Amino acid sequence: MWWQYLLVFVGALLFDIVPFPFLPAFTIMIFLQISFNLDIWLVIVIGVAGSVLGRYILTLYVPLLAGKYFKQSKNEDVQFLGKKMKENKWKGQLAVLAYSLLPLPTTPLFLASGMSKINAVYVIPAFIIGKFTSDTFALHMGKYASENINTLLQGAYSFKSIAGFVLSLLLISCLLFIDWRSLIQKKKLVLKFNILK
Image (cartoon, rainbow, N blue to C red; front, side):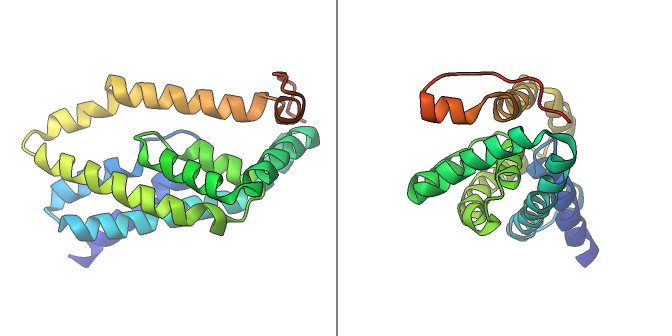
């Protein structure tokens, strides 16, 4: 029975380690909780731990990917955005918490964190609170809907999941293509599409 909880941990980790918008980790948590009739609170705690580790690893390797694939000017621009976010720590923490509470993929948040070289300790505590809260809600809703697992699996292609994926792509595009220095310092929106080496 312990291996089923290990699957929850590994599944959540793998869902949240990828650098592109993917299904939220709570989908695999719900699936495994329903399939094996696991204790919901253990699934939440173990799944959130897997998600946090996955996002932490993402912040560690994203700077390497960004340095390899993006121009130095784009990396410096995102690092500037990170410095501005760290200047007002409480607003930054509240933004991370609010974003983590939303039913949106947190990939853009951690891509920005990793690219801007913000220490993960700055982002993770608020993420844990938001993730624990939103996943608790999602898993209880999933348990309630467990009588019809086909509906749950079809929900992966629902309007909400597609809208969440599109919004994630939009947020990542904003992170990558907006010249953040111009926007913050000059209050001028400038888009730069030539960001790759």
